Length: 42
Image (tube, rainbow, N blue to C red; front, top):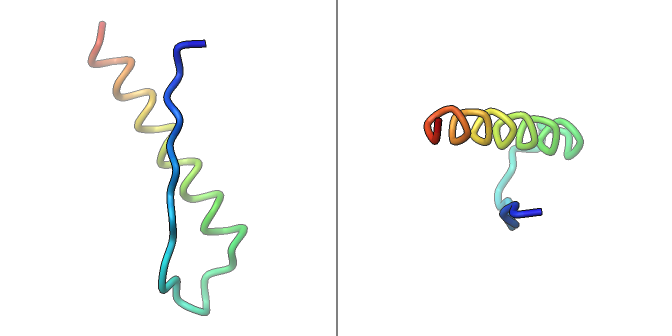
């Protein structure tokens, strides 16, 4: 599909951050990055 595979390793996440919240935040950030890259390529 022409996409890019990204692997991320998280270390030392504070105990107050739930893993599912960390994952959701990471996904949101990558989605925003994808939109920015698409916008820059037009």
